[in-house]
Amino acid sequence: MRRREVGERRAVISGVGQSQVGRRIYRDPLGLTLDACLAAVEHAGLQLSDIDGLATYPGNMNVPPGFSGVGIAEVHDALRLELDWFAGGLELPGQLGSVANAVAAVATGLCDHALCFRTVWEASAQGDAGRASVTMGGGGGGGYRASSFMQWTLPFGAPSAANWIGMMANLHFHRFGTTREQLAWIALNSRRNAEINPTAIYRTPMSLQDYLDVRMISDPLCLYDCDVPADGSTAVVVSRADAAADLRRPPVRIEAVGTALRGRPSWDQFDDLTTMALRDAAAMMWERTDLRPEQVHVAELYDGFSFITLAWLEALGFCAQGEGGPFVEGGERIAREAAGVPGSVALNTHGGQLSAGRLHGYGFLHEACLQLWGEAGERQVRVDGGAPSVGIAAAGGGPLAAAFLLRTD
Image (cartoon, rainbow, N blue to C red; front, top):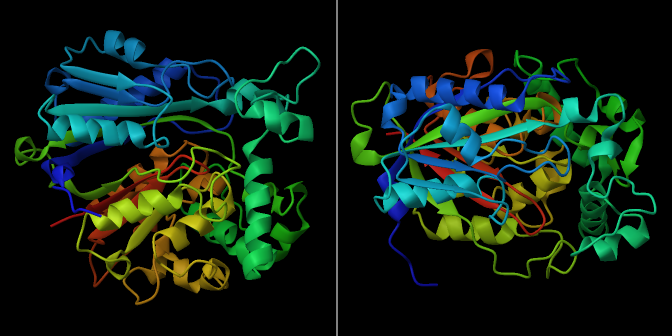
């Protein structure tokens, strides 16, 4: 493939922010969003008057309940921003596609400082009714009429991504010999990291036997393979590189972005369901840099379900396709202490969505930046005595994926 000019290097991440994160905190989603946005702007050392771009995913929508509820218009008006560019929508390459949009806007000069945000309040929306109450299709009843791809999945009792990803995991198990005992280490590693993350939802230690004994959700995925609903908002500021030199801290540089979808845009008709669109986003990212996987110190990889993280590890080249199970088994190669060790990478250092809470993609970018700035507190990883200098944040599954290769100088 022809090597394109890497325009994303004209953009940097200058600040990040996060609201209160918790289970069923019953706070207004706009309030959570403004907390995160104001924190990110202050973290960057900017003023609201400096913000001239705004981006989000998926925009203001109330189906399924708690999935969003806050869009561009609400934040634009509440913060009284004067914008040169904005974008919010659902048809993007995963949740971090909104950040990729902002990078493109900044890199082409449409704006100087773009504020990107993602808000969820699924825990409060579900209340005491259980997670099925906020699932697409809802478990149904006769009054629900499915459209798009769900008209083909609901008749088979598969209303949720847990069902679809479970089938993909089973295919990986069948084809490569992966086991539940191996997959468990994604969740066990996340829980170990969440134990020292003060904002994580689940901080109680978990053993392999705890994992194996918990109830199944959609074979082979058990409860601890599924992300935990939460309320919270995350924001990042994407700035023009030459406008960030005098800000509060040296920026995190965007080395390469991957957003490709070269297979079919389908949850169930992709040519290789063990890789999904992760394969294409990862390939594009590596095509745009001379860095290689062995130079990456921290990888914050989407774990809506644990198998997606395993697939990201393979797609990004930390191990070969089909070798994700042996790679994560035992946890040594993915532990915080593995940063900088040849053949290893520190994975989901904040606890991921499996234990820290489902902030739907943005939490991984937030954590990657904190690690690269050396601001992750007790869970901070060290490479040669200092903060790591190369990291990846990636989000998405099925036919949606985006990956960011980040570095500090």
